[in-house]
Image (cartoon, rainbow, N blue to C red):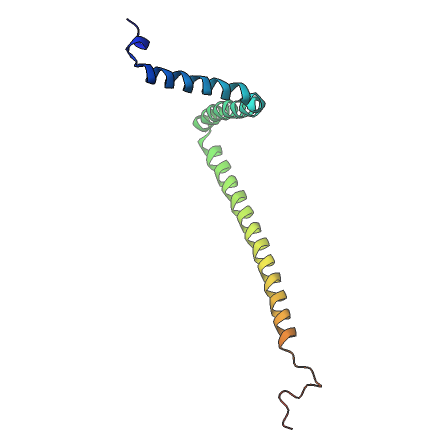
Length: 117
């Protein structure tokens, strides 16, 4: 007796429906196949690269520490530059707002507001 014969009628119909839906999804997913292939290749390269890095790290621990320091320095510099750029943008925006507020609050000389007349 097979496992399919143990399943009741409605459960079997539902399982067949789900299997059919999954098959249809796979058929229509062909356009994404290139993306999946690229992702798989990237994962494979990462695994291979991590093995190579592990071998180099075991053979040359001093070089590994030096490379880690250089990497951290580059990351720190990138963060510094990004913060500097973002702060410059915020400073420019605040200058624009301040100029706009000054222009709105400037009283026209011909106006009688503030005069003692």
